[in-house]
Image 1 (cartoon, rainbow over the protein chains, first blue to last red):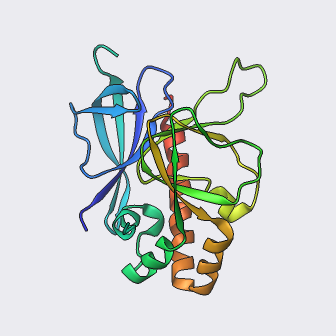
Image 2: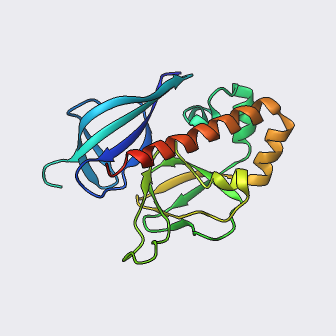
Length: 68
Length: 148
């Protein structure tokens, strides 16, 4: 099975609750991601925990995309 | 619908064999919610846990004293669990959970049937409980990183 990326997203600079979801691809700096109805830009991605089986555990920091 | 490929991508079931995943799949029932629907209500008894297959939910505990209104503490998307605490502590729902996407599709598992499977098959039971602890730990880490 291909890797599953469990990602903790937090939004810098605002009181957004952040999000957790499984993704088929890891987020990369500069990517745009949609959480709910809002779009964000990825500022930083770090490994949060060691991998287990096919699962990778990442933490990504976001900022709102322009126009949000 | 073959749920095994879907369940393979859920951390709770990491390490289970295809046969064990089939046994889990046999316990699942699909639930479809619309944006704004309440999935769980804080304080109520709960006997099901859910895996998010499609869409988003927000987790909203009641507002602390003096706060203006309840605020979401996290949004959860594909592959995440809702209501899993009731599987281990049998307590009331710790927060309200609301669907925020159209549609929001979940797979529901009844606590008693799922517990019976874990008690019947110790390999499944050990892995599920280990993975559930890891999932709760991940949520705590996320919470600690939010709002920095």
